[in-house]
Length: 110
Length: 115
Image 1 (cartoon, rainbow over the protein chains, first blue to last red):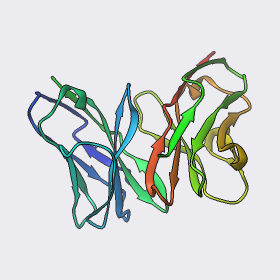
Image 2: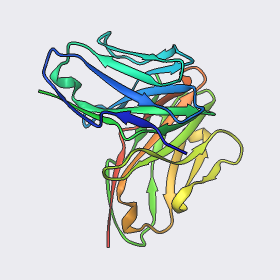
Image 3: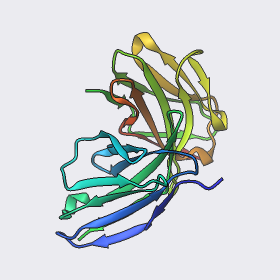
Protein backbone atom coordinates (compact mmCIF):
# COMPACT_ATOMS: atom_id res chain seq x y z
CA UNK A 1 0.00 0.00 0.00
CA UNK A 2 1.61 3.23 -1.14
CA UNK A 3 2.14 5.94 1.44
CA UNK A 4 1.64 9.66 1.21
CA UNK A 5 3.57 11.17 -1.66
CA UNK A 6 4.70 14.76 -1.62
CA UNK A 7 6.38 16.52 -4.52
CA UNK A 8 8.78 18.07 -4.93
CA UNK A 9 11.00 17.02 -2.03
CA UNK A 10 13.11 20.17 -2.15
CA UNK A 11 12.52 23.66 -3.48
CA UNK A 12 14.50 26.86 -3.51
CA UNK A 13 12.59 30.02 -4.27
CA UNK A 14 13.28 33.73 -4.18
CA UNK A 15 11.42 36.21 -2.01
CA UNK A 16 8.28 37.46 -3.71
CA UNK A 17 7.79 34.36 -5.83
CA UNK A 18 4.99 31.91 -5.37
CA UNK A 19 5.17 28.14 -4.93
CA UNK A 20 2.84 25.17 -5.29
CA UNK A 21 3.34 21.95 -3.36
CA UNK A 22 1.57 18.71 -4.15
CA UNK A 23 0.34 15.83 -2.02
CA UNK A 24 -1.12 12.49 -3.05
CA UNK A 25 -2.83 10.78 -0.12
CA UNK A 26 -3.10 7.09 0.55
CA UNK A 27 -5.63 5.47 -1.75
CA UNK A 28 -9.09 5.62 -0.22
CA UNK A 29 -8.29 8.46 2.18
CA UNK A 30 -10.50 11.46 1.53
CA UNK A 31 -9.10 13.87 4.09
CA UNK A 32 -5.81 15.69 3.72
CA UNK A 33 -4.22 18.18 6.06
CA UNK A 34 -1.12 20.34 5.79
CA UNK A 35 1.41 21.36 8.42
CA UNK A 36 4.39 23.69 8.53
CA UNK A 37 7.42 22.55 10.53
CA UNK A 38 10.09 25.04 11.55
CA UNK A 39 12.77 24.94 14.27
CA UNK A 40 11.27 27.98 15.99
CA UNK A 41 7.53 27.32 15.79
CA UNK A 42 7.47 23.53 15.59
CA UNK A 43 4.61 21.80 13.82
CA UNK A 44 1.71 24.07 13.00
CA UNK A 45 -1.57 23.20 11.33
CA UNK A 46 -2.26 24.99 8.06
CA UNK A 47 -5.53 23.56 6.78
CA UNK A 48 -7.58 20.44 6.20
CA UNK A 49 -9.52 19.37 3.15
CA UNK A 50 -12.23 16.75 2.87
CA UNK A 51 -14.01 15.92 -0.36
CA UNK A 52 -12.66 19.06 -2.06
CA UNK A 53 -13.86 21.36 0.74
CA UNK A 54 -11.70 23.18 3.24
CA UNK A 55 -12.96 21.98 6.59
CA UNK A 56 -10.54 23.66 8.97
CA UNK A 57 -7.91 26.37 8.80
CA UNK A 58 -5.02 27.37 11.00
CA UNK A 59 -3.70 30.82 11.85
CA UNK A 60 -1.75 31.60 8.74
CA UNK A 61 -2.01 34.63 6.48
CA UNK A 62 -4.07 34.54 3.30
CA UNK A 63 -0.88 34.03 1.28
CA UNK A 64 -1.23 30.38 2.23
CA UNK A 65 -3.97 28.60 0.36
CA UNK A 66 -4.85 25.13 -0.72
CA UNK A 67 -7.24 23.01 -2.65
CA UNK A 68 -8.24 19.41 -3.10
CA UNK A 69 -9.19 17.66 -6.28
CA UNK A 70 -11.83 15.03 -6.90
CA UNK A 71 -9.22 12.27 -6.66
CA UNK A 72 -8.30 13.55 -3.16
CA UNK A 73 -4.93 14.87 -4.28
CA UNK A 74 -4.19 18.21 -2.70
CA UNK A 75 -2.05 21.22 -3.44
CA UNK A 76 -1.01 24.10 -1.29
CA UNK A 77 0.13 27.43 -2.61
CA UNK A 78 2.15 30.15 -0.97
CA UNK A 79 2.21 33.50 -2.73
CA UNK A 80 4.60 36.40 -2.24
CA UNK A 81 7.14 34.25 -0.46
CA UNK A 82 8.95 35.63 2.58
CA UNK A 83 12.17 34.42 4.15
CA UNK A 84 10.16 33.20 7.13
CA UNK A 85 8.24 30.77 4.92
CA UNK A 86 11.32 28.57 4.76
CA UNK A 87 10.18 25.35 6.37
CA UNK A 88 9.36 21.70 5.94
CA UNK A 89 5.78 21.41 4.70
CA UNK A 90 4.10 18.17 5.66
CA UNK A 91 0.99 16.63 4.22
CA UNK A 92 -1.05 14.11 6.16
CA UNK A 93 -3.55 11.64 4.78
CA UNK A 94 -6.27 10.95 7.32
CA UNK A 95 -8.60 8.06 7.97
CA UNK A 96 -10.53 7.24 11.14
CA UNK A 97 -8.92 10.18 12.95
CA UNK A 98 -5.42 8.82 12.33
CA UNK A 99 -2.96 10.88 10.29
CA UNK A 100 -0.30 9.37 8.06
CA UNK A 101 2.43 11.78 7.08
CA UNK A 102 4.46 12.17 3.93
CA UNK A 103 8.17 12.90 3.78
CA UNK A 104 7.51 16.58 3.31
CA UNK A 105 8.68 19.29 0.96
CA UNK A 106 11.62 21.33 2.19
CA UNK A 107 11.12 24.90 0.98
CA UNK A 108 13.99 27.36 1.20
CA UNK A 109 13.30 31.00 0.44
CA UNK A 110 16.35 33.10 -0.41
CA UNK B 1 -6.95 27.77 22.69
CA UNK B 2 -5.73 24.25 22.98
CA UNK B 3 -2.07 23.69 23.65
CA UNK B 4 0.30 20.82 24.30
CA UNK B 5 3.30 21.06 26.56
CA UNK B 6 6.24 18.69 26.46
CA UNK B 7 8.40 19.08 29.52
CA UNK B 8 11.78 18.08 28.17
CA UNK B 9 13.26 19.48 25.00
CA UNK B 10 16.37 17.31 25.07
CA UNK B 11 16.93 13.98 26.78
CA UNK B 12 20.14 11.99 26.76
CA UNK B 13 20.13 8.37 27.90
CA UNK B 14 22.37 5.35 27.80
CA UNK B 15 21.14 2.16 26.17
CA UNK B 16 18.96 0.03 28.46
CA UNK B 17 17.90 3.04 30.52
CA UNK B 18 14.21 3.64 31.06
CA UNK B 19 12.46 6.49 29.31
CA UNK B 20 9.57 8.70 30.32
CA UNK B 21 8.62 11.76 28.29
CA UNK B 22 6.06 14.10 29.74
CA UNK B 23 3.11 15.57 27.87
CA UNK B 24 0.33 17.77 29.18
CA UNK B 25 -2.51 19.29 27.21
CA UNK B 26 -4.91 22.09 27.95
CA UNK B 27 -8.44 21.17 27.01
CA UNK B 28 -11.27 20.06 29.24
CA UNK B 29 -13.40 18.19 26.75
CA UNK B 30 -13.03 14.86 25.01
CA UNK B 31 -9.65 14.51 23.35
CA UNK B 32 -7.79 12.08 21.18
CA UNK B 33 -4.10 11.80 22.05
CA UNK B 34 -1.11 10.75 20.00
CA UNK B 35 2.62 10.26 20.15
CA UNK B 36 4.54 10.58 16.91
CA UNK B 37 8.22 9.90 16.28
CA UNK B 38 10.47 11.46 13.67
CA UNK B 39 13.70 9.56 13.04
CA UNK B 40 16.50 11.54 11.39
CA UNK B 41 15.64 12.14 7.76
CA UNK B 42 12.37 10.24 7.96
CA UNK B 43 8.71 11.16 8.05
CA UNK B 44 6.56 11.43 11.15
CA UNK B 45 5.34 8.02 12.26
CA UNK B 46 2.61 7.19 14.72
CA UNK B 47 3.88 5.45 17.84
CA UNK B 48 0.56 5.10 19.61
CA UNK B 49 -2.83 6.72 20.06
CA UNK B 50 -5.57 7.02 22.65
CA UNK B 51 -9.20 7.53 21.70
CA UNK B 52 -11.10 5.91 24.59
CA UNK B 53 -11.12 2.89 26.86
CA UNK B 54 -8.10 1.52 28.70
CA UNK B 55 -5.95 4.54 29.60
CA UNK B 56 -2.78 2.49 29.25
CA UNK B 57 -2.05 2.13 25.57
CA UNK B 58 0.66 0.12 23.94
CA UNK B 59 2.28 1.13 20.70
CA UNK B 60 4.96 -0.01 18.36
CA UNK B 61 8.59 -0.75 19.28
CA UNK B 62 7.82 -1.38 22.94
CA UNK B 63 6.45 2.09 23.70
CA UNK B 64 3.46 2.69 25.91
CA UNK B 65 1.63 5.72 27.24
CA UNK B 66 -0.78 6.38 30.07
CA UNK B 67 -3.68 8.80 29.82
CA UNK B 68 -4.43 10.44 33.17
CA UNK B 69 -7.50 12.56 32.66
CA UNK B 70 -7.31 14.31 36.04
CA UNK B 71 -3.79 15.50 35.26
CA UNK B 72 -4.40 16.25 31.57
CA UNK B 73 -1.37 14.11 30.87
CA UNK B 74 -0.31 11.51 28.35
CA UNK B 75 3.24 10.47 29.20
CA UNK B 76 5.26 8.20 26.96
CA UNK B 77 7.32 5.37 28.46
CA UNK B 78 9.70 2.66 27.41
CA UNK B 79 11.36 0.34 29.92
CA UNK B 80 14.64 -0.05 28.06
CA UNK B 81 15.75 2.23 25.23
CA UNK B 82 17.98 1.28 22.32
CA UNK B 83 20.35 3.34 20.23
CA UNK B 84 17.80 3.09 17.40
CA UNK B 85 15.30 5.06 19.51
CA UNK B 86 17.33 8.21 18.88
CA UNK B 87 14.75 10.53 17.34
CA UNK B 88 12.44 13.44 18.02
CA UNK B 89 9.17 12.65 19.77
CA UNK B 90 6.01 14.69 19.46
CA UNK B 91 2.89 14.58 21.57
CA UNK B 92 -0.30 15.75 19.85
CA UNK B 93 -3.97 16.22 20.62
CA UNK B 94 -7.17 16.56 18.64
CA UNK B 95 -10.64 17.35 19.92
CA UNK B 96 -14.23 17.65 18.82
CA UNK B 97 -14.26 21.43 19.14
CA UNK B 98 -10.93 21.93 17.39
CA UNK B 99 -11.59 19.34 14.76
CA UNK B 100 -10.68 15.69 15.03
CA UNK B 101 -8.38 16.00 12.04
CA UNK B 102 -6.50 19.04 13.34
CA UNK B 103 -3.47 17.93 15.32
CA UNK B 104 -2.07 20.32 17.90
CA UNK B 105 1.53 19.34 18.51
CA UNK B 106 3.88 19.88 21.39
CA UNK B 107 7.30 21.38 20.75
CA UNK B 108 8.92 17.97 20.62
CA UNK B 109 11.58 16.17 22.65
CA UNK B 110 14.88 15.22 21.09
CA UNK B 111 16.08 11.93 22.47
CA UNK B 112 19.69 10.84 22.07
CA UNK B 113 20.56 7.32 23.15
CA UNK B 114 24.22 6.54 23.62
CA UNK B 115 25.54 2.98 23.14
